[in-house]
Amino acid sequence: MSNLEKYNGVFRDVFMVEDAVLNDAFDNKSVDGWDSVKQLALTTALEDTFDIMLDAEDILELTSYIKGKEILRKYEVEL
Amino acid sequence: MFLNLDQKPPQSVAAVDDSRISVTYGDIVSFAEEFRCILPKRTLIFIMATNTIGSMLGYTSCLSDGIVPLVLSAHTEKDLYGHLRDLYRPEYLWIPSDMEYEFGYERVFSSHGYSLVRTGLTPPDLYSDLALLLPTSGSTGSPKLVRHSYRNIEANAENVSRMFGITPEFRAMAILPMHYTMGLSVIASHLYSGATVLLCGKSMLDKGFWSMLRDGRATILTGVPYSFEILSKMRFFRMDLPDLRIITQGGGRMSDELFRACADYAARTGRQFIATYGQTEGTARMAYLPAEQAQTKTGSIGIAEPGGMLSIVDDSGAETFDGEATGEMVYRGENVTLGYATCPEDLMKGDENRGVLRTGDIARRDADGCYYIIGRMKRFLKIFGLRIGLDEVEHIVKSAFDTDCLCSGTDDMLTVRITNPEIKDSVLDLIVEKTKLFHKNIEVLYVDRIERNEAGKAILNKQ
Image (cartoon, rainbow over all chains, first blue to last red; front, top):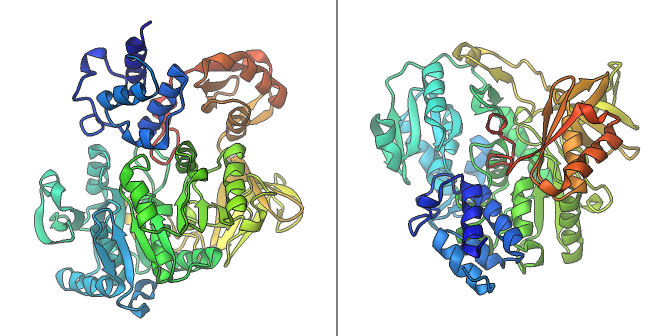
């Protein structure tokens, strides 16, 4: 499975959505129920999936599908 | 006046919120007067709360002016709000101004981002000492309301103030929602003490929370177990926060590991970690573990708060106040609420508890008089006559493995949901070992996640 597939899989599982809605508009403003519980679950799932440990700063920045990709790049995860 | 607010230095800052607007004690007093002119009678109102100055001013004004509020989240589900409105018929609502259209009533008055709207409904009669209504926490469907007296709220504020040694210099981070009993308790106890409340409506995973904690120079932070999980994830225990002196926890038992992390952090950095226990029925708080004992009494809720008394009623019905014992924990104090309401007629009821609360929690008291909650009276299964405490099983699993856990079941099957697929067999073995149940009476299910609300409580109908 490619890293992008794994990345999308994390979002699918955490937010219970289909791949089709995962785009530039998928963020904590537009997604209903993107609260701290979800954000923590997202953080943990990304850390487990890619075997990384996010800095506090990056956990706060993890507010959209797009930003998540940028953050992973910092941890040398190629999507 | 409510919480003696008119006796604080009028120029002192009482509260600051996310918008960086602040109000002084003088502002609170004059706002309550203004509110009284607009609404000069005792009636029932719903406050659709957010952690903002406008929301708080509605609360302090109602309590000062003899208006009885039911405090709900501004984001309460439509159906639930509609149900409660139709049942209790509040004459007015105090709502965020930007939600006026949604509620659709005529505005009477507007200030600090909040609006008073008239519903045209005829409110029920209200018992003379009824001060405040809050829904019971953790319930699904139609909640029972908890009826508070004026003295309940004052006693809670006094007790909590003594418990933490709150002074006017305190700056309290108020992150728990205002519609939640502990959230209100943080606000009331610090206002009573003439301190400053930092009202934060942001998620703890929002930059706004962290900048308020730091730049707002918070000295005390109160959270529920879930809050401390976030703090831990955010490497809070290694952060440099020079102003912070006390961290306090309530709202349910946290894992021993996290408890130790909090206690060690406090000891290492010269701060205080104070674990507390409470329920809406006891106006938020009833017990606390003095900071000096945080490192030696892991997982304990400690002793009764100042002004209160704890005891244990064992299976034979005998009540004891000291020595080792296990049984239902009972609390006595002026913060024990009047009772429940399930219909508007109940708002005329007087004090049904008379200062004594059977908590419904099973506790163990050690030889030093410290209490440990080990389960809920009603969260028990009886399999082959074995009493299986669901909270206890959850706690055992969560302490031994890296997983979330939720137990439920019938009288012949214990169902354990976990969120880590690797450990199903080990979890099963551990539970067999600890409970003496047979393998065939336990099913371990793997689930993606356990749905929890903002307070970290499992939402039972969503699993």
